[in-house]
Length: 200
Ligand SMILES: [Zn+2]
Image 1 (cartoon, rainbow, N blue to C red):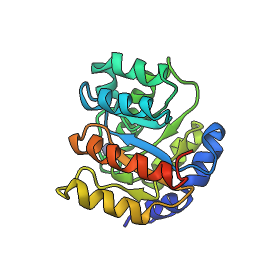
Image 2 (cartoon, rainbow, N blue to C red):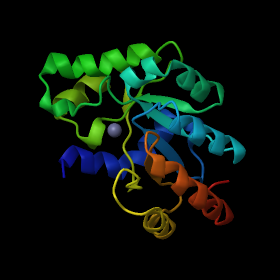
Image 3 (cartoon, rainbow, N blue to C red):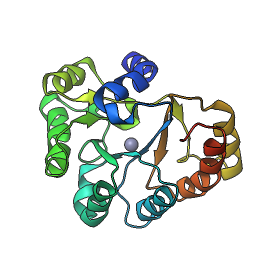
């Protein structure tokens, strides 16, 4: 595993609490990557609303441009939005100018909605060069503690069982709002987390 990724994962809740003090509590923090998606993100927003849960969406700039109404809804319903690059490319594979461009272009799409700057690299892979650029430009880099693996071929039941077992207080959980499986998993796990005091 990329060493920076490992360190950032370990520090993820602390970094998130620093970047987003209003999210810091005993709760776990739900994060959604790779959207907005015109169908799945909307369904997830309905579900979060019905449970009165605020989450963080790390959007892909290109998807946010194409699904602007969904991006507006995410903001209007009180969720946070972060930068997940413009076209979801592993930024360490790019030269310096292209890496910076991926970060800047996505931020340009969301900057009219949010003043804070939070960034999550695709696949959690960053280079020291991109870390320096991000810090210099006042970004907080946020990864996760628990990967739901809602993008994998695992069944919904297996994912829910693993999440029941593994997620503890002050964890950041990674989901993908462009995944059909994500909604099914959330529908089952949210009531469990709430009844166990992990979601207030
Ligand atoms: Zn991603």
